[in-house]
Structure formats: structure tokens, C-alpha cells
Length: 455
Picture 1 (cartoon, rainbow, N blue to C red):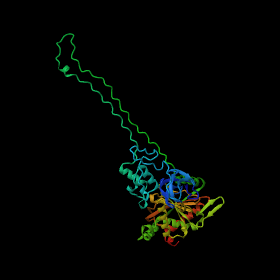
Picture 2: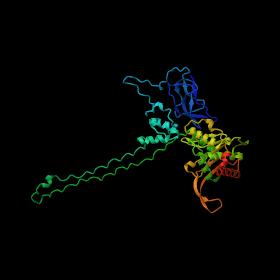
Picture 3: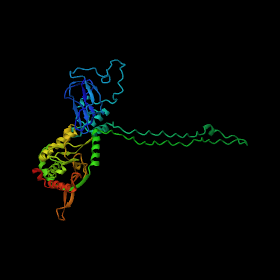
Picture 4: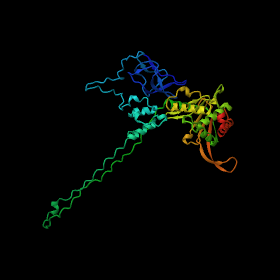
């Protein structure tokens, strides 16, 4: 019986997590057909079957992890004939009225139809859809190319009133109603008074019935909601491990510079006029190109430190930080020193789209020699980034702000489009003065952006 094992997708991959099975026991599997979604420490990617046959057993369930080369499922062989299915895999439906109950392990919430596999949706969105029985065909995606993301599922649940809510506090029981004393009977009131005699008693007054004061109802005290522990994904574990390694072992130095982006924005507008959106140049593309040119002049910042010495890399491979639902990913634009500004723009768009669609492969995440991280689109004016091992530097790009500033050396105040760049560098490899010269070269290239077209 052929085994399907956890593939090794990357040099440092140790284990993978099953995000979703695309096949179920009893399904026919053809060689090269996607069979499952696997989450590694870098990506979530579909794996293909290496042989044809019938899926007879799923060994590692969705949400569970397994080391590289461990058996995750089994086929009955390559002849495509149906093998006896496990008892729990495909329960027989009885036609009698006394059909056997479904196994307790089956989910109580109905799963979405099987034909939604071609719909663009993130792994987290698919997981939420399964948990709440949502048909993904009914959800409008807001991600790239209409991809369904977590926020779309939450909006759908909110619209249909099915979002999980906190348990309401039970209303306090009503306070006991006070019992009124009975009024005197009409006979007692209308009866004539007896003839006055020494021993006759006056008409009895109504007797007040003593009623205890109402007991105040206990006030329901809202209990604090229980904390939720979200298990760490393989990607988040890797980010944690590498950032701790970098922060503890790399002596960081941070240097910032302010850049006037007026000329760069003008050139960008002229270059993008009449071009389709997929070919347009972004500010980040211009920063990447400027860094690629400057790194050729400052090779120490395109290097890696080791106990044997400083390794100077022959090519400039710039990693572009991309924020995803599951964490941070940095696909690499290779050979930036030889690429035109347009080539960098097209390759960056391709890599970002693959990353956000969950289709990027591990080889596209390896080999970076320098990182550019941009939070300008979030309105962040300035920040610092942590160096990604084994690189020697990382550039943090802030938002462009229209700011009043002095014109050249005069007292005239004009509006300028200013942007702050902050370089984090490994102090074992370089020093503050070299970092400052590098940033000034990047500043020169961005403030005289025609150099980006001929550089």
C-alpha cells in the first residue's frame, strides 16, 4: 500500500501542518493532482499526489502536524481499483427506519459543498467556513482577484446574524410581589353597631397583615470572558524563532534620513500615465531600485556575517516584506542590480499576488541579501525593522507626508512630500558612518529619480 508522506519543501523545513484535505477516503487520486494543503514555516501550499490510486486512509487529520517524511495518508495502489474502505471513512447508509447513528466523530455543523474547492479563499477563511457551515459561493471576496479572506467570513456571519456571541447573563428573577392585607368584609362594614353596653367592643378595625419587605433580587454579575489560546502556526513559530535569534545575536544599529519625494512622485505619475494597472510603478519599486544601485557601491550592506568572515554576495536579491493574515512573508526579487524599474515592478506584483493567494513556493522565499519593509500604506511615518538572518541590513520605509519646509537655504516655506527611511544594520558588519553614506546615496537617487531609469 503506497504511503503519502510529508514532503520537504525548503532546506530548513522540519515539519508541516495539514490545513485542508482536498480528497476524502474512497476518492480516486490521479498522479499530479492536488491532494492537500500543507502549512510550512514559510508558506501554505498545495501538495500533489506522486502516484495514482484510491485514498484509503488519512493518517494526519486537518490541523495536525507531522515531521518531514512521516506518513500522512495511504493509497491502495496505482491500479485505481477501490480498496476496502475503513469503517470510519465511509459509513453505510441504511434504508431501514432504524438506521445506525452517525459516528460521534463526525462534525455536527454541516460542511460546505464539495464543489467550492475552486473558489479563491485563504486557508483561514476556508476553516471558518467549515466551522460555521458557510457555502463559500455565497460570500463576496474582498481580497486580491476576489479572494475570500477572514474578514469576509466575519462580515457574512454578522449579516446573517450567525456570528458567535458571548453568553448572555441570565436575567435576575422577579422580586416577590408584596401581599396586600385583605380589606374588611362588607358585612363587617355595613353591620349596625350593637347597642352600647359596658361590655360591648367597638367595631374591629381592619387587621393589617404583616408582610416582610421584598427581598432584592440578586444582581447578575457578568463574569469575565475566558481567555482564548490560539495555537502558533508553523509560520509564526519560525518568525518568533528568527526574530529572537536576530535581536539577541545581532547588534543592531539604526540610522534614519528624510527624503524629499516630490521629484520621484512627478516622475512616477508621468511613467504610469496610460499604462495598465499591472504595469504601473509604485513608490516601493522606486525605493527597491534605489537600494539595488546603492548596494553595489556599499557591498558591506549586501553581505552576511559568520565566524569565518564577512560574505559579500555577488548579486542583489531584495526581499519584499508582505503582510498576510497568518504572518509576515518576504518573497525575493532576485538580480535587482540588472533589472529595470519596470522589471522590478512587474516581478514584485507577481510575487505579492502569489503570496496573498497562498500559491508561492519555498524557492521564491530564499536567497534574500537585503530586505525592504514598507508601512507607508498604513500611514506610519517612521519605524524600525529587525534584520532577517543571515542578512546584514533591513530598510524601513515610512509614509510620504505633505509637510511645510524651508526651500533650499532660503527662509521661504513651501510644501514638500517628505518620507523617512530607517536602516537597521548589523554592527558586526558595518558602522554608523557607512550606513549614513549608504542612506545619503539612496536619498540622492530618489531625489534625482532619472538616475533610476539609467542606473
